[in-house]
Image (cartoon, rainbow, N blue to C red; front, side, top):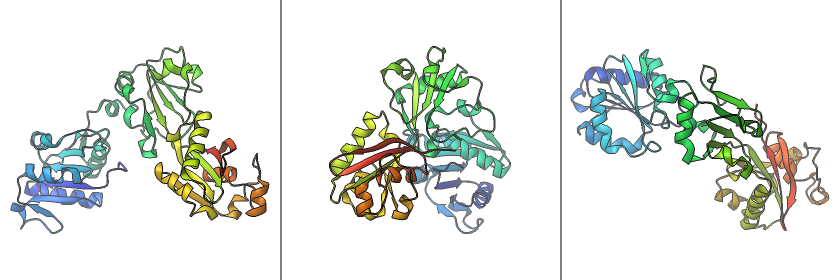
Length: 363
């Protein structure tokens, strides 16, 4: 089931639908049931009985749930939800099921909102037939606008989504390149479609006659790739860890300037930074903590003994060894924070801080 679907409302307006709603909640292990009050004496406890019209109920709960599951006819559901629909990025997933549970139909926010995945799950639980009409799901191909979402990937090239998606579902030749991030992003049981060709480098895609491109990278691409970028969607995986060492009292502004300038100079995307790593005696360092808050980054602290497990760093620090008893901070912390990944930016310095960048090595 889609990880981002947490709160589910299950709505029924018939006696048999109410019984099916109760069964579905039991199978899912969660969900709030809403049943017409006329069946108050026929349905067991743990149910929200509503006196309002169904249209009024849905208006009240629309923004309170990640998914609405109806045991109501499709036509009625469409008329009921129509006044509440705003945008596929914020509307809840909507699913409808007939009173015999023969069909489970993905109605709204099937792709982005997770209704398609939930439809498949519910159909499996009820032994029903799932009905899904989203082109990428029907054709079992790459969902361009949500690829890697479960990993926290950030999408760039929004202006190209429509034309790239069309090329993907129409079976045109698509070039795909990845040099960072999780490798297990293909979740379907079927193989990657033949029109998706995987390349080992960006340069090898040029002149290959691809209609569009999907690029998974933490690198900022220069103008030499403009012909690709005009027809590309980029995904920024959370693949970089920043190791930071600092003097007491360093400001958040200095930390920010060092981070931003270092990433820019090394053509790395700030959107791909997963978190910060440092030594545990800097837990109360406001400069680091405030910078992390500005960019919504986690901070991982390592003990002296953990840092000293990293015995091979390019730039060991005599001062760190003298005053703290460690081989260094920025470089070993980055390596540890990336789960012993690759150090791609050795230590750089500002007046009161040091910084290094490591890339997480995903399986």
